[in-house]
Amino acid sequence: MGIEHALLCSALGLILIVMSAHQPFPEVSRRFGSLLLVLGLLGLLAESAPKPPSDWIWLATLTLIGGLGVVVGMRHMTYTRMDVLIAPFAGVLLCAGSIGLLWNEWDAMSTFEQISAFILASFVCMGEVYLVFRGLLIGRLPQAWSQAGLRNLQRGLLDGPNGALICFEKAWDIEKEHLNPMAYLALHRIHSARGDAVLAADWGQRLAEQGGEEAVDSAWIEAIDSALATIGLQYTESE
Image (cartoon, rainbow, N blue to C red; front, side):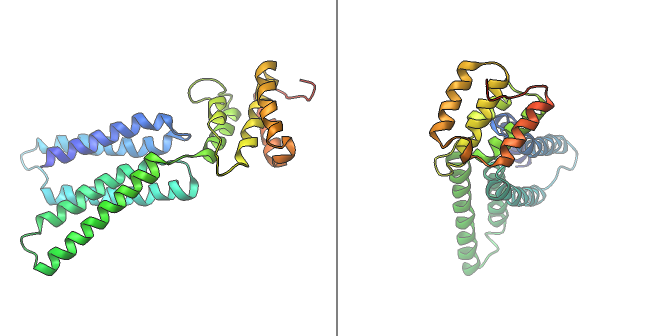
């Protein structure tokens, strides 16, 4: 069973690394994916040793890594709002490890312990369903996209699949409408500073429909102007 566990870690790690490119802060899930990939590769190497790790060690490791990953992932999903991938993928490891540990001890359990173990396993699986639904199906990070857009703007990364323009275009949310004019203002000022009058007018119109600059906190406006100045661009009202 050790090879299967190692392949599971490697597969989840590769998927996380690939999917991290579609996150506002790709380094968050990429680090966890790299950890799983390294763990899986080391596991495959260990399985070829004369005395490979026992199933109990593998299951305990998956449970530990999965549990820590769920805690870290839930923090990013609900508090920092920087990532929605770590929690559901770590939940897969937690389910595999914890249910495997219960299964190994199943025959030695009393009837009451088996019922308790079944209920515990059911709760773990229900939690994983919630993580998948909350993270992969409805998880959106509008605030994180705005933060990533500002960071990339300060770095001068405007174009490309991970550029500031793409980040701000993704930074909208139906429930948090105050984030929309922030993104529209950033896009309007960036295109204006670059001399693209057509796109600037388009985003400026959308900003006006959301209440104009009065709907945006002055600190955000100052941050955008400062970031533009850092990369040698300047927004003026006449443009």
